[in-house]
Image 1: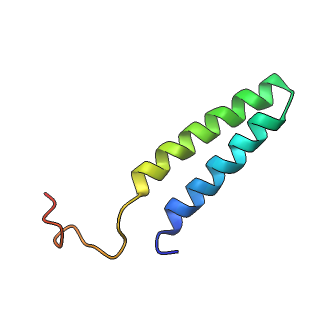
Image 2 (image 1 turned 135 degrees about the vertical axis):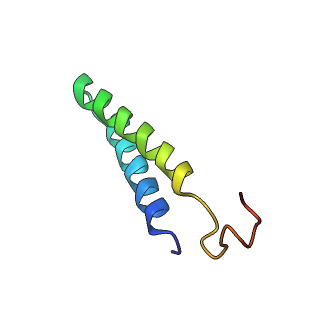
Length: 60
């Protein structure tokens, strides 16, 4: 596990998605769906090759 932030956000997204799918209370389902969506967005934000620097890949 090289990027703990990506792993943590992925685990939160998966857990919240499971809660949203398994719960019958509409309020809990809505909250869990929002949490899963935000966590999924953060996975994309934090995802990158942790062994590469911006200079290595010539990022601006």
